[in-house]
Amino acid sequence: MKKLLFLSSLFLFLGCSKDSNGPQTTILSVDFTHTVSGSDLIMYPFGSLIGEDCIEGHLCCVSGLNYTNAAGDNYNIERLWYLITDIYLHSSDGSSKLLKEVHFIDANDRSTFSIDAGELDNGIYSKITFTMGLDSNLNIDNKYVNQSWHDDMFWPNTPMMGAGGYHYMKLEGSFDTVATKYNAHTGPTMAMDMSFDKEFDIFLNVDDDLGDVNLSVNMEINNWFQNPNTISFHDFPNGMMGSMNMQHKFEANGEADVFSITTINR
Image 1 (cartoon, helix red, strand yellow):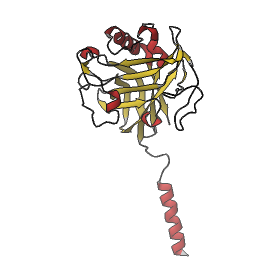
Image 2 (cartoon, helix red, strand yellow):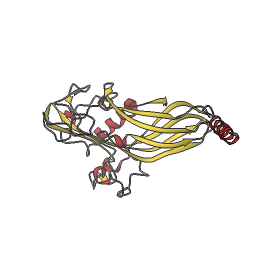
Image 3 (cartoon, helix red, strand yellow):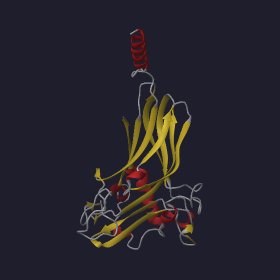
């Protein structure tokens, strides 16, 4: 009986010593989301015809042209691949934490939507910064040859296109009719650095009671085609990889308001 009482007391002590209100670690994740005119992106299966079934595991499929941009073009989105680089979290004391150097997102593959940034030290974090695309320090021909996205994102090494490296974004689909295709490919045309930096103010006070935190970075796709430049797919019927003018317009629009961020405690 005494032994039973002792064991019961020991279990009670151990159970009480694991204080649910005690210090907690804070794990940060960064998610990437995509909207068109404020609604969640609905993909059109790449290469599919109207009436074909969705591919199991993909986000969704639609028939026809389900979006309209500021130029009045009706369009759909069949592919969205892009690279976000130099993702940093900055604290109020001036220090910074590199969350990831290069991250590839495929809008049709949920497994690419999130970065597990690990545990955060206690302190106040005041902003997050990243680069859309790769700057000249990272955008080097064959630098990421061992990455799964290397073949899909490489940029041609030609006098017209530049010194190779990688695309920043491949946005593809149909407009006007499902048979008329567009290719909005951004990258280092003529070896010019067309990447751009984004900085967002946040207030994240990490202490022993905060719990896990998610930073959600959203791309509003229709904003690539407006503010300050209204862009029609008719403006680049043969693609835009060789057009400095079009690359600069996309860069300016991207800098303006394509990206936004929200903070969520989980």
